Image: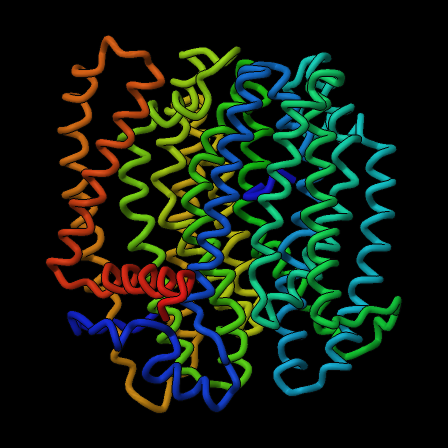
Length: 563
């Protein structure tokens, strides 16, 4: 898979001091954390995850640049993107976040209760059972790949069907590696070790870059597939195995499917599987619709989606992954006040960071596509296609980011059924949206349908979660609605400024080399807009701006030995 490739009661209290917000261990969270042994700051863990994922996203952009330079945006790249459809289905249903997210709360529950032998028994049994099952499924899919590709892409001509089948067979075994890595990483997250799991996507992207620069010379487009397979093995098997060995982890082949913990994992797995996979399932559905569109449409949608996924992965998924162990531990010990505080702060921080990112993606879409992709065989008209799709995806960025955290709050509560029921209902709306908007707006309509579905799903899940978290003993005074509204207003002000500045810069740089001019516009418009955003939020005394600045200062002092 091309990894990246998710309700709080209102309060009108305006601000908090840095000391009050500097980490989730302050105030109620800190007090309850002392009793539970929750000995880490989700905020610092979030910063680590965001930093590591930032590196991965930068390499992901470089990966896309290499692909664009080598192959452009055409039937070859459509076949390469489509080759991940069948493996992605297997990833989302078996080897993806579903199983690891189901395992983490069970493993964590045993671990927090100092039942470490039972925790490792659950891990060993789940690992043995699922690796055996996934390997069998991979072999079966290798055999039926031609028929499966024809079924998944009914609009493909013979050339794209043949190429997609060949490439699919190359990348399918990577799903075994992703499964193994996902299970090992779940135990690392549960033990508050975040670095090695965060490096997995980075290694994966390096493998694809190596495939594009080196392996593509003898193998053509298949070199990218071989590079993806290599990156999956190193990033998802070699690195986590090394980390597990260093931490003294225990694994022995077991098929103890009768163990209560193992059975609980599998009971959680099915609904979690669909609940976590919906963002990926949406993209799989888009590829099916796009197979009827002109050549290059699948590639344009994939390129645009990954550009939107950069801030989503850095912010939404990074914070959600870091907070998930805290939510799991707090829910397991029924510390509902602390859990509400962590959720509110997490959501506010997610939207504080994604709101300006959304505005800049909308304003700078063409410039971003030109700087990242327009080299070699990638043409200006290809850039326009990607930019139009990016705007459709960017509108839903805040919803996908919030959903990443909200989903994990349900899983921490061991309620994995609600997200799947809501997601299934929204998918029933999403498919008709694709039909209607594709007829009206072509491939851009498909991107817009995704954003509309994401917004509907996030709002619905948030309303249900607000009622689902049990009431706390102490009053919940954590502000939520007012800061979120102010973030939206400031973002709109920033957007007006960016829209006024961008055309002026475009006229000023009209005679420059196109890629250099685009880079200058990104830096100047982005830099000034972010400065305005931070200045206004600081003037309004929103806690998140001071919070982020304090976290970076503390990280700097720690890294340079001044703290």
